[in-house]
Amino acid sequence: MSRVAYVNGSYVPHGEAAVHIEDRGYQFADGVYEVCEVRGGRLVDETRHMDRLERSLGELRIAMPMARRPLGMVLRETVRRNRVRDGLVYLQVTRGVARRDHAFPKPGTPPALVVTAKNIDPSKGEASATKGVKVISLPDNRWERVDIKSVGLLPNCLAKQAAREQGAYEAWLVDEDGFVTEGSSTNAWIITKDGALVTRYADTGILKGITRTTIFDLCKREGLRIEERKFTIEEAQNAREAFLSSATTIVMPIVEIDGRPVGNGAPGSIATDLRAKFHEVAEIV
Image (cartoon, rainbow, N blue to C red; front, side, top):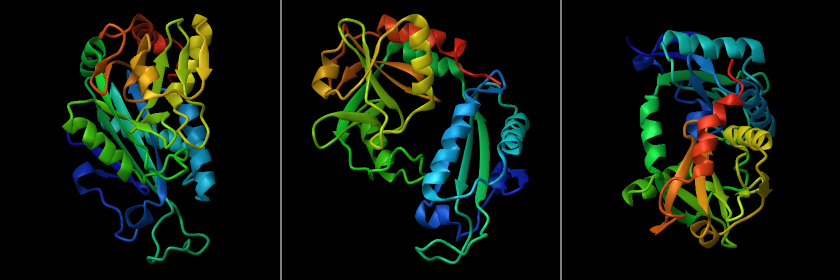
């Protein structure tokens, strides 16, 4: 069955889906996006994703394309039409279509909305988690408002490509003071020798990941301690465990950073347990 996309009010064949050449997302990366995991045909952590979408749009002064309830209906209908059982649904909102000008278009210009969905074989993620993944480190050269989930992701793409070219799964970005911010598309975590989970505090320097937030809930349930603070690549290499998190990776154990093994070079027990229990606390509707 061919894929289906939602584009500005219509469900269309994925291969024929298109936006106007003067859509500001295309011209200026003037828009935001969300990616929501689909598990068993249902959305994971939808409420938190919608909360973050509204925040990102508000920071850029872009209007919601529709109210939350009908938007949720569009997400579910796109999932249904694509027969997605396990995978993801992607939504993108831009400032809309207007004559190319750096300044905002005239008031009343409707935002543009695109939604797609696709299946992902969960066994592939499980295979990666069983082996663990490698990461490299790179300087963080992104703009200062990465807390906004903007579609302007060129530095992230370059970092991800550098990781792929070095045989790694992800690139951890390092600020000018030598501290890890986050991955090119994931949040970064380490586990200290005494079992504390460490991740950078969520200010404007990182994206406040939805999966990251749900991990906080899981750790509270499991009695695990979290420290929101900075850490260096050296501390990560010497940590008991390390892992990354996102809606598409959930909890992914890291076994090597910049060519040096983490712990015993195998996925750690705490990260593995968090991955196994994650959906017990996530919202699934």
